[in-house]
Image (cartoon, rainbow, N blue to C red; front, top):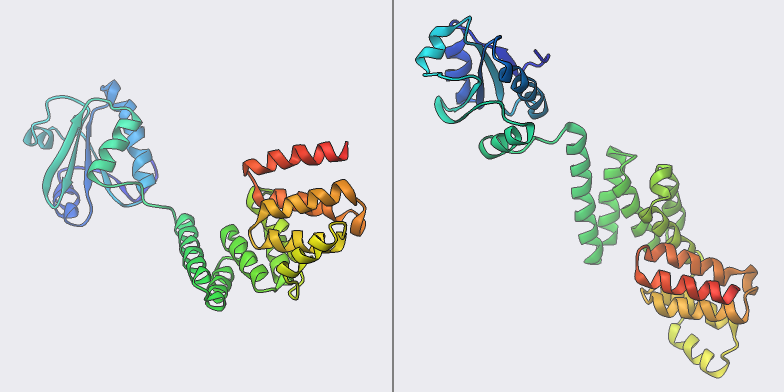
Length: 297
């Protein structure tokens, strides 16, 4: 028998307490079995496994019908294995035969509910809940409240990836690039190299090139007068990218790669790659990667 406080052996002495009275508090799944019954031996490990997974959402009570035939007779057990589910002292459902694990799971989900989340999943859900709440505040313009909420979430769970990513994003938006970089560095390597980690790194790299005094409209006017101005085009590319106009930003950077690839120590190519990270799986990335390759070769 699996070592679990949620699995008990039944007999005449404890049947009333476990099944009848116990079902007032928790559903009780009674497994009627016998040592000679081959299908019983197939079903029992499945029931025990699920009792452990459900972690107290139901009690598995096992009755050896050879050792305690009187109870089996009283409940009208005619074939083995038979499994009966009791709630609030009432028989609510039952099945006979050795069902598969997926069939037993379906039975439990219908009559008891889904498997409860583990403790670590509950902590993660709490973190995710605060991330969602913080992003809503941020989108409503309450960036200080959003940041405070995420900082509390980080204090509670310093390694929560979703919290670190969200906090990094909000810090970039508020100009606190050093804290954003700390969030990036705190990510596990696998997450830092993942799509969202590379996206945060890309935004951070672009943000470090931004100038709060830049006026995009003035830069566009400057480029109309002098299309060869690499400085104006580069600043406008960064401004467009950070404003969410990624394609316009990539167009300007690509022109720089084609006409002045060495500008600012090759920054146009580097920032174009950073934008690819920001966009992730966007179809534009493949299109502009091909354009970049053609420009370099």
